[in-house]
Length: 395
Image (cartoon, rainbow, N blue to C red):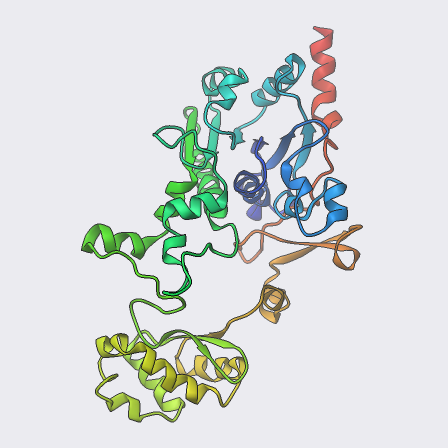
């Protein structure tokens, strides 16, 4: 399950019990698996992670290998355990004794009701790292609320700052709150692994993790008393900075500094804008951003976004074409960087082969990535439970 290269597998001596479902928890544990951890997925018998039934391919979902499951469960083992049964509890507790980390994303209180709560588990494993991921945290007035990504996006203020003045609020187009919650959990677990002198309970709130990433939107209110405005694809701190129409496609331009603004105008043949009273100063450009946009887009209409991208970046003007997901995945850049890995033949996948995203980091020039594809439901039961059940029976 883990990689051979120790440099890219710093967690190769770590065992994680992944009790999570759908996205935030599985994504967190996937990052640990990429870094070498042995991750054992604990799943409901016969059904498993709900994500096994989700995704764009009906055939894969019917086979309990849904695309949503495949996306963040590569390299893990799968064990079916009924945690409501006496045998399931015994098996789980035995696995805890040989594990370093337990990750769960039940609603607060569920593990206690199962008789498998934090106090019991740390009594079985003195240096256990227990990470509970929930929508709103383990305590507080909202703790027991059900939470999905869109609920958190709305509650965190993300939707309120996303969109345009005429089309808002809007959710971000992928499960950003789930993903941020997962990354926060993975980071916290890695920090806890650096010091095993005591057991640790990590309480990850997706709401708080998301709010913590909102930087300027939050601080402008907390520090300056200015609520964030909805400005679509514009940059609130500078102009021209945003997405602009070209002769073919949208182009992001970030002319945030004076030298970038000047270089942009000169390359577009619009040096006259530099001395125009509506645009000569930074604050003037911000105040008149819509009129300035029209001037710039008129010049950009001469070429495509890709052409402008190739011309402006060498001049020190940050620019990038707005790409579709399929376009960036097919790019020479990601191909050379090796972000997407081929896991070999896989029935039901596009082209008959399974391709998944590896770790988003490189270590010593190499990208961590698990070696095995996502597991079939319960495929590792005998591996992890066969021997221990034999020992328990002999006792």
